[in-house]
Amino acid sequence: MKTDTADQHWNAHWAGDVDAKWLTPEDDVHQWAAGLQPGAAILDLGAGVGRHALALAKSGFAATALDAAPDGMAAIDAADAGVTTVVARMHELPFEDNSFDHVLSWNVIYHGDEDILLRTIAEIRRVLKPGGTFLGTMLSKRRLPYELTKAPGREISRNTWVFDTDRGDKRHPHYFCSAADLLSLFSGFECLSLRDQEHESEGSFHWHLTMERL
Image (cartoon, rainbow, N blue to C red):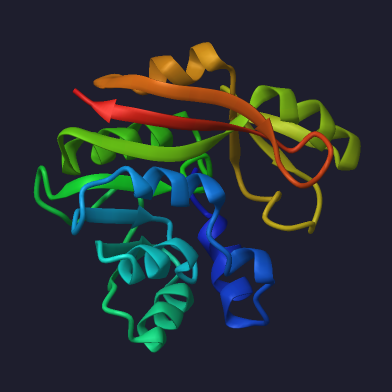
């Protein structure tokens, strides 16, 4: 069963009117980027329409945006901001080993089951240079009860849920994890920071994590 299917929803979303929140970079990303070396090569993994990749390029970084949704990459190309765009899947990155100084992936890599997630993390580790950092988010297991109050759901494999709703991308598999699960998944990384943060709606808990590639 294919589980990394959320790009089907997001490609259709990017083809329509895009909400302002998907165009505005996150404060965490600005703060992280402020501490990086000028001109560093950064991969924005699951870049959407480029809110982070475009901001990173504007700040002087060598930004590469990758997504499985081609309409998002087309929007970045149309901005003509010097961002390299690549249409590919997150668990099959078409880059050489040690290609990037840093990798960013905001609200992306939890779209799939544990096999997809482990393969994606292995690919992030492979393309990162030793000592490079990964900034990303994961869905917290604390969020799951809130999702189940909104729509019926079922666990299709360990920690992987789908929901019977047309709200957003929730029909597609999502992976929810505890801190212990998360640290186990990120083999080959040192955890620099980890916090469970509620986003804009009640119960919308995400892990915010910064990892260093060993």
